[in-house]
Length: 278
Ligand code: C2E
Ligand code: CA
Ligand code: CA
Image (cartoon, rainbow, N blue to C red):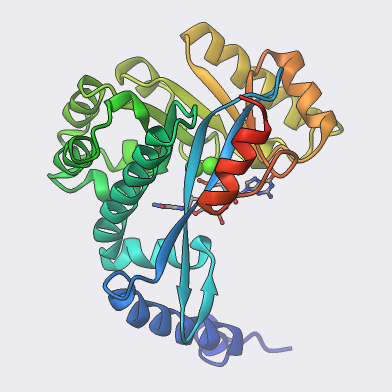
């Protein structure tokens, strides 16, 4: 049988054509989405595995477009990173999360902080620190009310002033956390160099727990390393009581996942927090 050349195959791949079509559609709609008010945030509780207490919420972006419907972040964030739109969108996320946090504090909700996801592209711009300082000031929040989650991609892009940016954020009191730890490029030396508070164990490692010995070994190793370095660990994607108990056994104190709650609209989140009896 004759092998077809790679290019020939690609040209006629209907799935690829569909993907390309989707990409063009998404990028065209993305450009206007912010001005049209199509984004909102939902909030997922980070739960203390021992006693069920909640001190932090992670803000997760949601996009509803009149033409395309509800588009999950996994389907548009990377496009927004390619086009650069993520910088404006990300600034909106920071602003909106701080606004919500301030409203909750005013309402007496006992939430210590809100975590937002920050793209590596935002770290490559000059005004990330300014954007954050401005949002905190505008809403009367201490830096400690805000946590930034960023992936290891930030570290490999290695912008000349990454370290300065981290230190400036740290000086504001902002909490800095590595997201999806272990999934990316994992050069561990930055853990010594940067003022980081904690890391979030990528949820792919939790999937096989407790049945899969390799996943178990990785979770144990990350927990041990974090303890030695004095870093907090949050486990993502906790879906079963068995996973929760396994994590508690490793001394991992905080988890996030469907076992507790998915991302919630602000009102439902406040209700969740009140009912968790805090
Ligand atoms: P992430 O930061 O790892 O966020 C956690 C994702 O896992 C969320 O999906 C959440 O809904 C989902 N999740 C939570 N608990 C469970 C669980 O128990 N099991 C499983 N299977 N999944 C769970 P979501 O909201 O679709 O977000 C996907 C990704 O999109 C995020 O992953 C993050 O990388 C990105 N993202 C979301 N919001 C923003 C944002 O405002 N800015 C940027 N730059 N990225 C964002
Ligand atoms: Ca995250
Ligand atoms: Ca994550």
